[in-house]
Image (cartoon, rainbow, N blue to C red):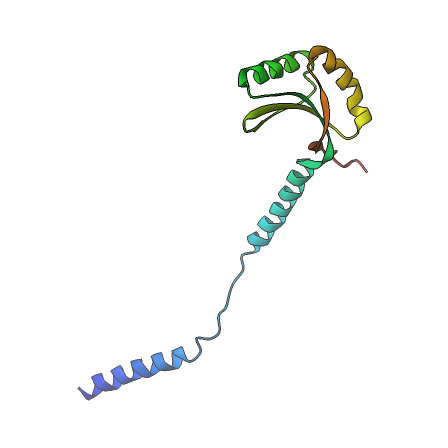
Length: 142
């Protein structure tokens, strides 16, 4: 019986001493984590370089109407005549607006304004807007 009490007291005192050093924590970092972080940085750099940027510019407003079908038919006509112009269909209650293109300057948009005014005689307007600009990739051959 005495031996059992001695063993039990040794076990409990061992646990007390083990808990006094519990303030220090050792962390072992896997070296593959650093490799994954570098890979993610590279991916983020490539995707942001290829993404679109928004800058102030101009768009051509073709139509402004509460009739949704009328605006969609105008969008179809623009797709057929000028596939290079990106259309933007915007709903601002109660009207639908159709804006075209991403032009940095008024001079860049003027030829299209003249051409589109023949297609839409009701009125074409050049409006200030935030436009999307595709960034160019840097040369990797240097």
